[in-house]
Image (cartoon, rainbow, N blue to C red; front, top):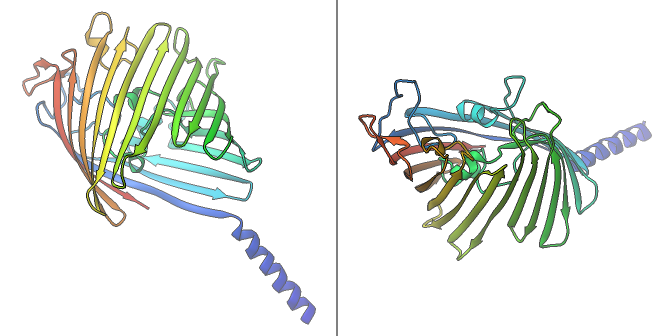
Length: 344
């Protein structure tokens, strides 16, 4: 009997020890917002189109919802997975090319830590390009930039991350066409690479994309610097070209922490396209060439796990792509929103 009890205790201890090497987590967020165009109409035009800045998310006037984001992850000593699900308008916009099903999957991948310096990831993961991300928890500004909105959202494929040293990292990937996360429609593949040095990243993307006339090449820089204990400056620049049709831009993200609960930040972005490179603003020019400046001032006030974000935004374009309250074309639009984001 004593031997049986001892064996049972040993099995229980070994089981607990094994469980300690593995970690299951459940996290996510919920967000909602109110938005009002100050210098333009807040209702749809005669064609049923909402008149907002031509960027992703936060595009609805009045009271609206963002998304519910639910993330389940399992981290073992060597292997693990992430299942990231989204529900709501922001989530639907994020997975717009997930076909043939109506998808709620934002990310779904497994990984293997082959060694201390090499990790393989297989499945659907958010893009490695750009400063901003899909989840509002990961962004300082609630509305998004033009560079983020017209760059990749997600990829499906295989990537390998290498820790080259304490400061240098390298990522190599082979993937489906950008944002085709469930299926490869035409046998096209895209190659990606990222070189990192002390939280500064140089990103590359190259390959034929479904529905394009030639291979797409994109180079992107993302980084930032702590200029003081309370002052951070984020940076992003990108260039994308497909057979002479291109878009490019640059943005600064200064953020100043005034107290433990409040931070104020600015996004100043310049974005341009040639030959309808993004389809964001160039459609109003016969040659498809246009540019826009986006200046967004955002406050961030934390109350526990809840963050309140008031935001004032001004978009000024080279073409008359916006409207005033009488639906007369003009080249600028000012808007205000306040968002509430709960992270768990």
